Length: 79
Image (cartoon, rainbow, N blue to C red; front, side, top):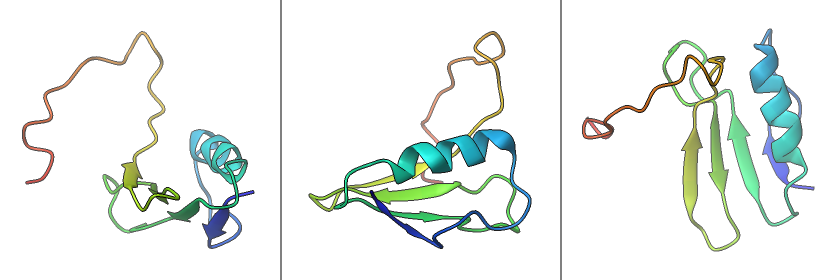
């Protein structure tokens, strides 16, 4: 089971974030995950995942359905 900081969900979170939290917890032991990174910023990522080989992934959970989802340019991602 992955190590998650904090170890349980904080505050009132959308069901999609809770579902993702539970899934991420099932990753292998050598994964480290931080959640609730910047609760005051609505567009902030929900999770930071660090893999065993020290790669990182920022993850933002969306409540959009597959019909609502659209491709988007990521050219300004690091702005």
